Every structure is written in C-alpha cells, then in structure tokens.
Length: 181
Image 1 (tube, helix red, strand yellow):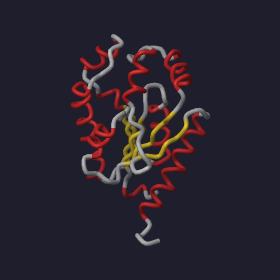
Image 2 (cartoon, helix red, strand yellow):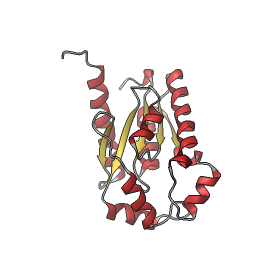
Image 3 (cartoon, one colour):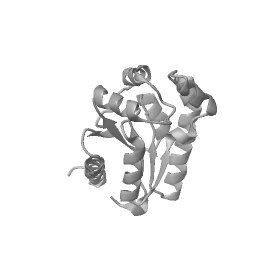
C-alpha cells in the first residue's frame, strides 16, 4: 500500500466488534490517523442510545455527513485516515463514500454470542443491552466484496489486525493493477 497517496478506510460493524481497537492499530500500521466515529454523535443521539433506544436514519444523517467531511478532507490532503463507524446500511456507506471510489471498508464480523459477551463486559459506554445489539444486527446490510473486506473477529486483536492489513494490501494491489491483467 502506498502511504504517500493516503488511504481512507472505514472500520465498520455492529457495536462491540472492535472498531476502535482495530481502527487505532490499523491506522498505526498504515502510518495514518484514527478517528472514532462515536465521538462525533450529537448529544441527543448519545442520550438516546444511553436510554437503550436505537438510532434511526434521521439521527444518523448529520453524523454520517460529518464523518464524510473528514474523509473528503483527508482525500484532498493525501492523508491516510481510518474511521471507526458502524456504517450498517449500504446507503450509509454511500454517504460516507460521497463519490470517493477509493474509500474502503473493513467489516468486522462476529457471532451474536461473541458480540453480546463483549457488550456485557463493557463499562462506561453509552451503548447498552441485548435489544440494541439485536436492532443493529437486524439493520446491518453486510457489505459485498465490491465495497469491503470482511474480517472475522473471533481471533486475538493482533490476528484480526493482521488479517485486515493483509486483505487490504491484496485489495489495494488488485485495484492498482492495470486492466486486462
């Protein structure tokens, strides 16, 4: 991967899949910067999630546009930027992509049981409960190979990050190959 050109990557998935930890390590491995999308939710959305209420499309709209602005700025500056963001629906990913065909998603996927175990072990996080996880799993439109690499989160953090890096390298190399080869 050519870090000089900058890459824009969104680490996506439902709550507790590891977007922040994987995203931070991925940004370090790529020589880039990491932003946790959760830090950019409106206070109203955070309050809603803290009450155990899932967000709707209207709640997410301004948030997704803010994150898309960060990605556009990184693209314009040739910066490598990794953002952790649930990006559950294709249209959310399209908002983040905003015409940037080079934006890549890393989908962190795991079993409901593993995700629930991780949620229940978290402290001091606004995302609470089994019902919200089930809501996110029901909302999730898993990305196709045309927009993401998918990584199973069942391994160690190092294994997950290494798999993500290898899959991204393979994807970026394939995209740089001249057509007809």
